[in-house]
Length: 283
Image (cartoon, rainbow, N blue to C red; front, side, top):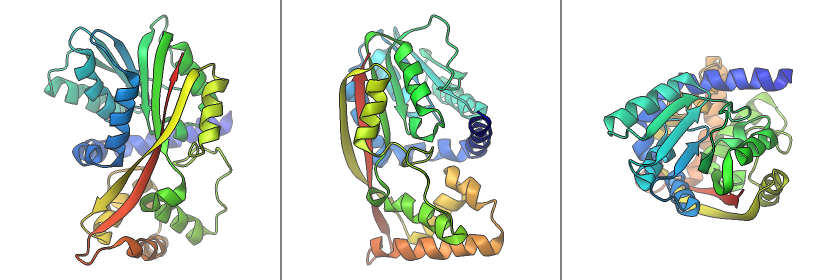
């Protein structure tokens, strides 16, 4: 339990620190592979006007704000995240878009205290894989759905399918001579295995489970732009790189850039393949 608490606190701090950059990058993110996953999730959730939707680990609320259009003003979308700065951003974005049906609240998906509230659909993009108690969180989601309600989720596919990210994680491991994480340990690739994800869902009591993949491209103007994106602003990896001593940071950068060069085009831009595992299941 001490590990889970320490991990949660560190993760909450990291996401809180990058919240502003994460929200600023929302439009670009939705044009990339994560946006394709959101498209798939929203179709799979089969939302209808008037329904109640819960978004877990919402970040800047990208998927939940899109769901608001599907349920309409007579519906309700509750966007939740364990980082207060993310919740504040969702409130601001919903108000700016005039989405009165959207509420944002601080909530830990592993221990969601929502009383008797129940939902027609639950959405979670790139959240479950980062939680130390994944089975607990999925089971809790199952308990928050009405009978027949749907859980739609997305996680990153295997490292080799996502070199834009694995180049960074591999660079950290090489720099610090660290072993690869244990299977299922919280991290971007924790639920990449289709069978593991399916077992997680069925083990929580879900039925009618569908697991697929969506593919896209992670594109940047240059390798340097990709490196700056990862190391200085838009995601949790930036929190790690910014903690490094200058010489350590340069070693990580050198290793990562060398791995990224194979994806560079003649014009200097870089296009990494990217893939996500998506799933829908019925309560």
